[in-house]
Structure formats: structure tokens, C-alpha cells
Image (tube, rainbow, N blue to C red):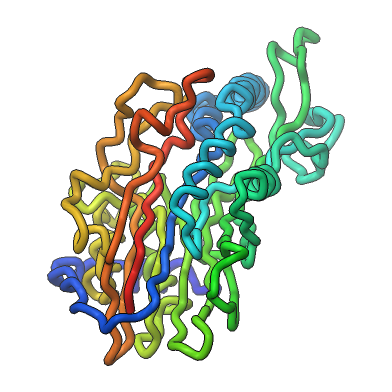
Length: 394
């Protein structure tokens, strides 16, 4: 799948011309069939990972390295403060209440640390930190078991894997304290409820060629995004494909390129009913352009591509109005007062039925977005996103 940069951008520019295509209409009513419940859920990494990028902007050499280390220390402290072990309990209760058959889960972080490595005395940025601080997947699966609704991870796809120094002070003047390397590995996962009658026929995953590559304080940082999928069936019934993906947040040009890869890859077969759970980072009501995007892709470009040329239906809009489905906008520390400041929608469930088949929403909800979801002791919300759960008849 590794195409040249120029050919990818030419294809992307051509796709922009298609964004005016009207949205795919809602599917017709399906014949009675045993319903399937699906969910998309972003767990939240635990902090704003753009902080080190902002802190080092315009700096070089030792000054950039010091700014990077101090910014990483703050970021890692906020990860502790946002307390995933407690948030996981909230998420498990939320999932146990909805009991989805399949969940597309994004930002399933693995936080690790290791000895501090400095320029000239180690290999800064090398991926060698191994001491586990938080394994979001293991924690959530354990909490789901304790909630009485066990799930199994049927596909785990690793995305970004970055390591960088974290400290307070300046190691070059001997004033640094609390020094260590911090490593973040991001995964996207598909979970299947252990008691579901769905049977997995096939599965797969991959990373997008289109990705954000930066140099932060002289250290390479590649922000990798990807997808995973399962083909499932109910007994001898008709099968369908469930796809989970997380598109680029910091570039709509790249998010659109990734959507193109998705719809020519695992979600490309129009002869198969396909359902996508997506943190799309694309608000259908936002047509602004990020100043760093040279192709001038609007924020809603990836969404319009999926629901226009891609032929997928935004299922939430067949169930409730957009304003009842806000899923994003919470603060970094996820402890703001109720009601939460969710003010736009970037988490979606899409469907494109095979010829002769239909998909209909028979129940739906946005989860983790009411005052009841907030932990009364810590003040934490389950995530900086809300979840979307839909029960579908085919």
C-alpha cells in the first residue's frame, strides 16, 4: 500500500471534487432479523499530546530538548491525574449497561517508562522503555469481567509508538529531577462480547500510508493511524463486516487520504454489508480549513467523502438529530462540571448494505455524556469523548 507521496496527493486532490455529492440516503426498513448492537468508543489517551509540539516550536538544540522534557513531564502528570483505572470502571459500567455485541475502541493506550536517555549518553527517542504504567486494554477487560459482562479482544492494531524524555529542570546544567523516558503506544481494538451469538469468520488490520511525520526537538515522531475489521455472522445467517478506525486529528488533508485508503481497502467491497465505527475527527457541520493543510481540505471533507462517494449512511442521523448526538469537546483533564461541554460530533457509526440487504436503527444512545456518567468522588468523566451505541436490524 505504500504509494509515492505525489501520486497520493494527486488522487486526494481529485477526490476533493467529489465532496459535493449528496449524502447517501438512509436505508429502507429491513425485514425482521435478530438485531445486533454495535458501539464506537474513544477511551482518551489521558492528556493532550500536542503539548510537547507546542512547547518546542521555534526552538533548536539544547533549548528544544529541555522544553520537550519539561512538557513531557507535565503531560505524563496529567495522565496520572486523569486516572484511567477509575475512568475504566466508569467505562465498564457504561458498556455493561448497553451490552453491545461489538465495540470499536480507539486510543487504547499503553503507557510505559524507562531510564532517561540524554544526547551523547544514550539513544533519545529509541523505543526501549518497558516498565508498564497503564495498559488500558488489560485494565478495561478486567473491569468488564468484574462488571459481569466479559469481552474479548478479537483484533488489536498497534498505531503510533513514541518515546521521549521527561524531566523537571535542565539536565545540561545539572538541575534536572524526576528524569525518565516516557513511552506511549496507541492501539485500536475491536471487542466482542463473550456472550454474543456472533461468530467471527475472518479478521484483519493495517496502518494507513498517509500519516503525520514530525521532528520534535530533533527526535522523529510519526503519528500513525490505522484500522481493524472482523467479518461476523449469526449462526448460518448473513455475514457482515465491522470496521473500526481512527482518522488523523491534526490534518484534514491526511484524514481524507486515510478515508480514501479505508474505502478502497477493508471497507471497499460494495457486495458486502459493511458497518464502520469511527472516530473520524471530521465534523459534518464544520467546513473550516486548518491553516497547515496545503490541499485545503475542509474539516467535514473526510465525512463527506465517506457518506458521498463512499456510499455510507451516517446511522445516527436516521435515528436522532445531529444536536442530540454530540460526542466531543470536553477539557483535557476531563473533570469539568456537569453538564459536559460536548458541542460537536466526530464519532460515528456508518453502514452500507450489500445489494438486496438493508440496515435499520431500532435503538440508539450517546453514552458517557450525562451527569450520571460523571464520577462523584473524583469528578472525572469516562473520557473526553462520548460513546455512540446503536442497535441494528438487518
